Length: 193
Image (cartoon, rainbow, N blue to C red):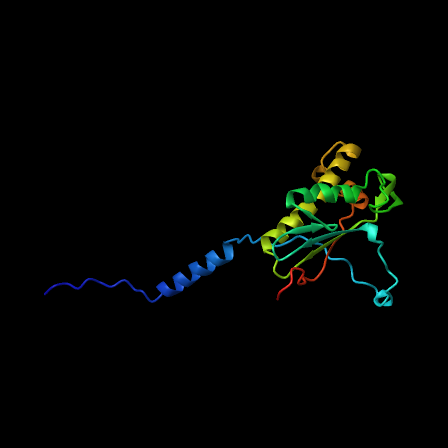
């Protein structure tokens, strides 16, 4: 008579596999850093919600339109995406105090003293047919304009790049160049549906 080979008990194999699965799910990190980094404005106090008296002068608004064909219209003129950053920097900074560019307001900023701060607002509007890629490119160019201005100011005032400054100095630089990008709900600028 031949001897039977003993079987390996497999009753707990499913438990072991399940425990390994749980272990790997718990210990695995998933980096999903996608999306846009935007700080929303604080809520408007109830007493000011229906106040239509808050007006922004036209000279303080930099209008950027993107149509359904991904064409860029900046301040009423066609422009290439690679020109947007420099045009935005000029608008935000208004170095020559041009009367067609934003007004400036004297503010006392800690670590900076009295500084003329631009009252600028960038209005980014796009068509429903605008490609996501073009929208992100425009966002990146506008953010790069603010980043470059902040970097230049940090190097002038503190001798270091903006990212290398401590939180207090970064706050002072941000107070000089506050990022004000207003995004309107997409519309049909290019016609069609």
